[in-house]
Structures are given as C-alpha cells and as structure tokens.
Length: 453
Image (cartoon, rainbow, N blue to C red; front, side, top):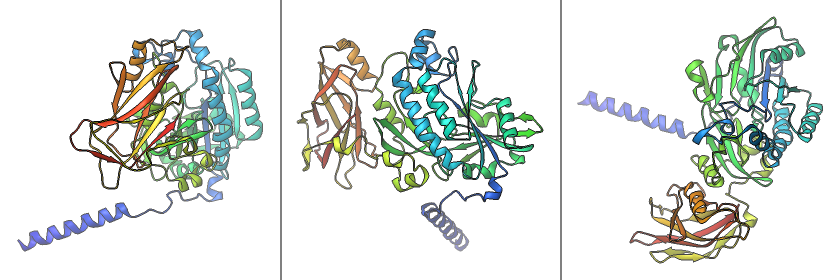
C-alpha cells in the first residue's frame, strides 16, 4: 500500500509538472540563423500565378460533376482571368506577399519563380514585370506547359547557377499567389535544409487566417492546418547540375510518400480567404462568408502583437472582429432576455452580415438554444426564384418555413462571443432579424452586434 501510494504521488507529480510545462509561455520559437550560415543555404520558391491549366483534375474549376464547376474551356478562361478573381490576387501577391518575402529573404540566397501563361491579361503581366524589377530574387517563367506546385529541375538548376551553388541540399518551397509567409520563414526552415534530410518535406502547421473584406482582413484567427498548401518545403538534392527529390505529392498526404517534419512552433503563414479562390468554387453559387469564416473558426482570435512581428506588411489591415467596427450596428446596448417571444431588430443593409451575440460572464450557450429568424425581400433586378433563394440559404444550413428563414446561433464560443454569418443571394436582402429560444428557460443576452459584409 505504501509503495502504491508513493507511485501514485510520483505519477501525480509528473502530471502536474507536465500541465505546468504546457501552460508555461514559450520564448520566441525561431532562432535567427547567423549571416554566415544563411549565406550557405539556397532556397528556391515557386508560385503558380493563375496558370491556365484547363483539364487538370486538381482544381475545382476544372473538375466535372458535383465536385467541380464543370466549366467549358471558354467558361474556365473567363472565370480564371475575371477581374473579381485576378484583382485581389495581383494586389495580394505584388503588394503584400512579395514585400514580406523580401524581408524574410534578407541574408539568405533566395530565388522565387513566378510561372504564368502567355494568355494572362497584359495588365497582370505588367504588374509581375514591375515586381521582378523591384525584387532581384523574383524570376518570371512564362510557359505554355502544365505546371507543378514545385519548380522544374531546369529552373532549380538556373537558381543554383545564379548563386554559384555546386552541391548540397536546397530548400524548395511553394507559395500560392494569395498567401503570405512569415518574416521568420527562412529562419524556421534553415535548420532542416541538410543532406540527411534530402527527400524529406517540412509542413508548417500553424498560421494566421482571415477573410478579405475590401481593403481589410477581418476575423483574424490562429489557424492550425498541418500538411497544408501554405508554404510547404521539400529538401531537394543538388550535385553538379543534377537535381533530385523535387516531385510534389498531394500536400494532404505528403507524409504517405516522404518523411515529413511538422513545425507548429509559431505562425509561419498568413492564409487569406476570398471569393476568387478555387476551393470556394462549386457547381452552383453558394454562400461565401458562412463557409469561409466557419472554416477558420476553430482556433482563437489572432494575437495582433504577434501579427505585427511576423507579418508587418499586413498588420495594419488586420481586424479581429468579423467586420469593420465603424460599420457595426449594436442593438439594444443593455441586456435583453430572449424567451419564446422573439426579440426583433430592424435590418435594412444589403448583402451579408455577421451577427455577434455576447453573453454575460459564465453564461454558456447550449446547443440549439438560441435561434435567429429573418425575412427577405427581393430587388427588382433579382434573378433568383424563391425556390433558388431557399436552396442558396440551405447550403449554409438555413431552414425555410412559410417564406421566412431560421437557423441556430453556434453554441461554440469564438473568443468574441457567438457569431452567426448570414449571406443572401445576389439581389436578395435580409430584413427583420428575430432572436428567440425554443427552450423553457430564458437566456440573458448582454449585447447583439451586426457587422455588414
């Protein structure tokens, strides 16, 4: 009995120390590599800048059936190069991503290739040419060929020749044209670029995500996505012009074919959700904001001080709230009690909205406890039938009943209260918001705020 008690006390002590270690704040994760060490490492990056790849099975826009849009080639080209899709990408890549990459690349040998098709509209080519003149590490690659996420061996060979690199491992990384890498990215990756790791991959599990809304990035969240497409790095081999181990697996299963290092010590990427992304494209129109914001909700609000350190180029445009505070409308500043009788709020603004419900301290919202109902009106130019309107809302789990709609406020707290995203189809307006409970006990609500989107 005494021996068992001693073992139990030791086990409890180990568990207590483990919990304390988990809670203990860590020092900054990335240790800066010395200038001398950095000068010996070559990184080669690659961005596919809206390459025309009709027929590829890897993108929603080029898939048939329910999994994709089923575009014809003309429809695909029109979508690919549309202003709605291209303008944010060109702005993000040339004005945010590359300036930040320039800060990250200081002290390192970096060559970043940008591949694009000859059919890319001229004004976007002009923006890329200007970027290549501004940043000497940027190299343009106009090509008619199908392009992989990693640069070709011939491009890697040119990069090695540019920096007089003769033999050793090379860090080859992917950067999509609407993502941003941390200023610490190369310092984080440098220790992994060694001969013993040739053929391995490194995945950055932790990042920051937000939704693009005009010039701002709203609802900024910590984002954990291991084996993502946000800045993965492979360690390629290079020896006297021979390049090896650059084939890119599907990023979600990279560890099935290659040893993979997962590094989530600090945010290494900034992932931007916006309407023009291929991942948001399906066979028919669906709500953007509910899906985009629910996808990044699981972690807590971003640390803006950390954002300023790691992502200085975007820091001033980052907002934690699900919209602009200056546009927000607060209903009934005092506390209200939602019961079976609805509490109504007049809403007249067009477009989507984020409804933020804040409860008093220590009050927890139960699942399916608080319901939001609303009505809609159609503008004269609306091209949706009532049935199509209902189908659009149903894609975001909004139910229709006798011409009105209803859905539940998520019971999971976001660190900013409970947030519900509502988005009508084009030409339809949400009106007359109503909050009520379907349970007997009342619910005290401290504040309700609506953010137009």
